[in-house]
Image (spheres, rainbow, N blue to C red):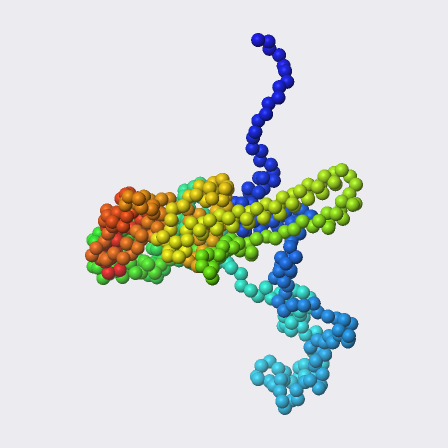
Length: 515
C-alpha cells in the first residue's frame, strides 16, 4: 500500500455552541435579579438597545422626587410674572403681629441684657444662627447642610469594639493585640484562630495575649470574644453575676441538655429538678450569637417569576410576573440613521455586530419567558391536587416527565427551574420543590407516593403523638405501611433527621419533663 498525502471529503454532524446559543442557555438559568443586572449591562454596552417606553416612564416616575408630579411652569408660561418670595419678603409690618398679640421678645430670665443688642442694631448684623460668626447653624445657602447627615448610621461590630478599645485600654501593646483579636472574630462574635499563633506573629508572650483577651471579654455586647458556646454563655452569666458552680457545670455539659437528659444533669449539677429548670430558663434567655446584633443584613424578599391563580371558571391561571421581565427593544430608527454616516469597514462591522447582538438578546429574552411559562403550566397541570388539597397530595415528578411533554431536553428544564419561584395561593415555592422522587405503594397497582408528601405525613404523626405514646421509627413504618406507603425504617430515620426532629428517646424525655 502506497504511503502519501491525499485530499479526501468527509461529511459529519456535530453540535456547535455558537455565542448566541451560549447566551440563550445562560439566560435560562439566571434568576430575575441576575437577569436584570445582565440586561442593564447590555443596555450600557449596546447603543442600539433601549428600554420599552412604558418601562422608561416607570423608572422616571420612580426616580422623580416626591411631590414633583409635573413640571413647574415659569411665570412666562403661566401668563403672569413669577411670584418668588422668601421669608424676608413676608416679614413686612402688615404681616407681623402686634406686641399685644404675640410678645415674641419676652425675657424669661435667660441671658438677655437691656444694655445689649436692644439699642444696637448692628449687634445682630452678622448673626448666622449660631454662637459665633463661623457657625453654620442657620445657613442653608452654603450647601453644607444635608438632612441625611442627621440620620443614624448602622455601627458595625468592629467599629463598636474599636471604640471601646480606645477608651478601656491605655497600654499601646494591649491596643495592638486587641485590634488583632477583633480581626479574628466571626460574624457571630466568636474568636477564631489560636492565641499561640497570634503571639508568635506579634512576637509577644502568650500570657499577655490571654490577659488582653480577658479584658476584651468584658466588652459590650456580653459574650463577645468567646471561643465556644459554653464560654459565650458563661460570659453573659458573669455579666449578670449569675455564674455559680452549679450553672457552670451545666454549661460544661450542654450536650446532655441537647439530649434532654435531665437525670444526668441533676446528678452532675447536684441540684433538684426545680433549680435545674430555673437554670435552663436562664440559659434560654441568653444570646448564643451576640455579634449578630451588629452588621445585620436585611433579608431580600423573594420575587416570584410565575403567578398561579384560581381561574373563575375552574382550573388554574398561570402567567408570568411582568415585574421580573425586562423589556428591551432594538432601535431601528437609530440604526438606520447611523448606517447612513458610517464609512469605514470597521465601523460597519461594529454596527452590524451590535445589531445582531441586540436582536439575539431580544429573541433570547422572549424564548426564556416562553420556556418558563411552558414548564410552569405543565407543573401546575401535574400537581393540581397539591394546589387544591395540600402537600399530602403532591405527586412524584421528574424532569424527564416535563421534558417529554414540552418537547425539550431535561437539562433545559433543569435550567428553567433553577432559582425560579412560583407564587401560589398556598405560598411561594421554588419550582424545583415540585420535583420529588417516588415511593412505591404497598398495595399492588396503587399510585406511587411523593417523597415530600411522605415527609409531611411523618411530621404530622410526630406532632400528634402524646407523651405516653411516643412513636418510634419502627412504629411509624407500620403506620405508613398500613396507609399504603412502602417505606423502610432507615428512610424514615433519614427523613426525620433532615427535618431536624430528634429521636423517640429524646422526644420522650422532652415531653415527660416539665420544661
